[in-house]
Image (cartoon, rainbow, N blue to C red):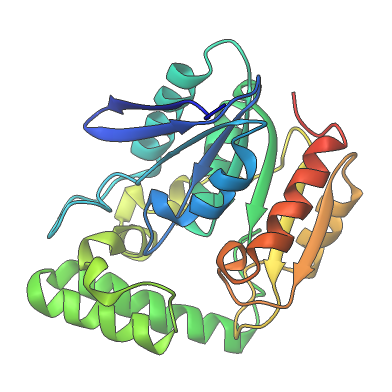
Length: 265
């Protein structure tokens, strides 16, 4: 029997809902992706779970110039969760900036989140001088590209994308997707650095990360804290940043096994 597919609209954003099951997984992507990042996961999970995904506000509008604050994004995620699962907490499946946004939503509305699967971003970075330098270089470049916008901003964004071997077609990527980098460093009172709350998961967490990349986005202490939490687990992969694309079969298996162990509502 084919699984159910539904699309609803919340604040001009299409929300894609696929699959069966009593539990809901809300999937949140990051730069420079869209809801299609999770295609392999929806195929793997939709027989057992309702899979909910969307493209982040501002990521699907050519030449977009709006920057969305943490309050904007966590409020949007709250409206999505309320609409798709009003009576039951959800499982969050998060990647990169999606981790920051999802972690902050979970911190503000812990009763709405049953468990969290975070991919490749933990507490920020490894915080070495080299790591900080690389982070400031590429994030500053993307922030400048967003500020410049237009054709030049797109060219700058796509050039860095190629340098970083991002698994994405350049024509699909625009400078408008870079607003998280601008707000992180140049957002003033709305900077993510100022407005993000310290994150400590209230429930079980699976943290997955790739080892084959120049930067880590967690500290050793983050890994220890996650591993010490009841029902939580840390799994490393021999991949780069896009673990779910580079080793989808193993990634899906690890997530399924962890959820089946009871780390869900």
